[in-house]
Length: 436
Image (cartoon, rainbow, N blue to C red; front, top):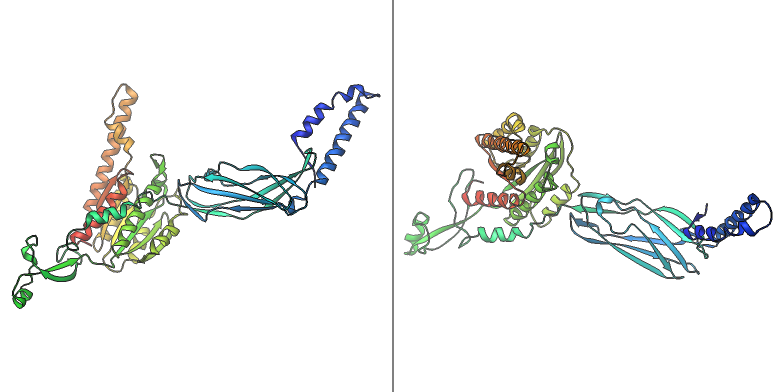
């Protein structure tokens, strides 16, 4: 093992430089003597240092953390030897974890341990793996160290932020109406489930009277309905190149995931079954429609590692994969970018086929900066060109949205802060009206 010199050795070498003058003999001989002495002392110092392989280094990190959230990364250094050890550790956390500390030193007494904590704040989704650590132990004089790398496996799952998970309860509470919600008895595509008979109240609609029950008991009786349960909701997530663009500094796919997870949370609380199909030029992830408290976790596990690929998306293939998992009439939510060329050539024809049987919502993320350019002040040629480009971009998106509506889809084109809520409200509105 080759000794690793320290800064203290350099200081000692500088302090011994005057010996080159006072020692007798030729100058080169004096230099050889001083350097040899320093090397011998450094080697002996490193030899007397505890073996780095005997130092136990443990890394403690959370199994998962939400994107943008903070968590603690803790190293524990244990010295099982009989001598005090001055230990330096260099770890290799992924840069996107934003670890405040990557290297540290600790003086660990014999049989003792030291703990070092830093904060991580992930800036990228996915499974982020750690590499090896390098352990360096200084000799008694601090002139040289013994060093050894070792593999210390570890990984942390960075999940989608889902910052609006608390909105789910508020949306459901706002959508709730008296008496469990009276809805249309029959809407396009299936209708609602009969819940119960009860006495008529002045707020009830006259058409809800059940004449047979009224005649039987001798007083007005109405039927109440509740939205059908166990209905399939399938999120169709585009992970192609168009979703790699950033809005407000965040990739479009992350905004889409935030909206998808809020929709899933609301739908699962409504006792519906939620599934997912993620695609670009091929299908990347599939979660069969399911219900229950564990389904949201299954959806999150399926999408947290998804990254955009710089390829053209196969909308026909993605929509076909979603349709195959929706045997009965379902709500299919396509999260993509509303690019005019793609919509007219590929997405609209695929949506037209789906809309014959299913309720289809196509949702896109609109960049608020473009809207600000459209209405911004024009002080020169550059501002004029920017405004013209913004007007043209907005017009193309409007035409793409109109084409999708002609194909039979409900279209949402919202800024990132509004898209999750608008998507959940569109789902609740579809259930309330009996369209789903």
